[in-house]
Image 1 (tube, rainbow, N blue to C red):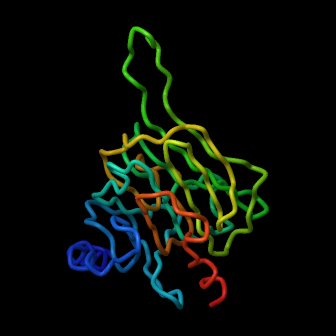
Image 2: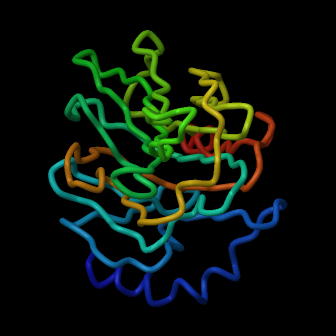
Length: 234
């Protein structure tokens, strides 16, 4: 597996040209293409799903650190992750972390004893510098979570976060979960991206990830990824 990950990193520049979208600037990551990998942990397993490859993370130490901040400079975006959550995973699952430990975007789930889960999307834009009019600025962050909106584990889903100056919205399979009035600003521009774990190596993910797509605009729901439908019907 480690040799395969290294090969994917070396071939990433060649594969990039094959990634296309109707929206210019769209970024698509999958087991077939990832940006350069500068560190990895454990033995994430690549497997065939029937419609393409995916990566399994064991929840005990599998993770990949990618040398990319895909939302850098974007005034708005739609971030999507096609994933499957194992039902016997630990309660806190953090599997996509973009930016730094300060300014960041996090995709997380919370797994309940009945093997259902709920989505947690977190955005932190940092704390503004003090000014005479605002000597004690507060951190600009939002947590989009509702523990009542649960979903059965061990199935494929598409998690989505849209961000713009009008605020943040989270979705599961195109169904709205939560909203925040926090206005997105292109402040998450430094750091890297961790997949399978938070960047400080806590809350290892147990489940599968098939695709991550970042589109530099807010997409209408009818243009969200539908890979989960095909994956559940394979």
